[in-house]
Amino acid sequence: MKLNEIKENPSNPRLIKDDKFKKLLKSIKDFPQMMSLRPIIIDENNIIQGGNMRFKALKELDYKEIPDEWVKQGKDLTEEQWKEFVIKDNVGFGEWDWDALANEWDSEQLTEWGVDLPDFTDYSDKNKEIDTESFDDEMIIKLKYTEEDYLKVRDQLAKVASSPEMAVWKLLGNE
Image (cartoon, rainbow, N blue to C red; front, side, top):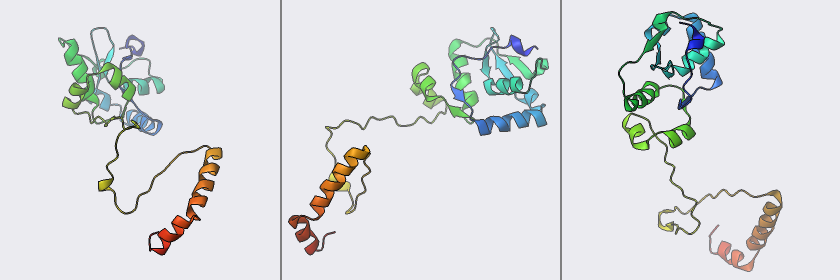
């Protein structure tokens, strides 16, 4: 089959970083038979449903034509089954394109199919009460300031640290 007859899936929810892509290139170069064992899966329109990264690797390796057994056409799958296949085929490899998953996929199905979704709970609500009961005696807080604001905060903290109230606080054994 000619490589230019195959089309990349524009909705592919997977990415592959440079180091892993280099490993994929090497594995195909060193062991091209793996392509027969794990072929590129296409739909009836020759759009890749499984193997987008292998396809990119083949292009990178300057393949123009590949053996027919390196490509398999999925037949008689519904649109829903294709979506499920795309996710299940990629659960253990590469990295997810979180934007594509968030915008084009159902989170319940993704979880059902084995994708570990991160917790995107929004904790930015400034009006929420903070439960201080669970804090230890010591707490570290990281704040991000502009340089100008940092200088102002540093000066104010220096004033607090040298205040009579802080001296009493230290005298009582609190530091």
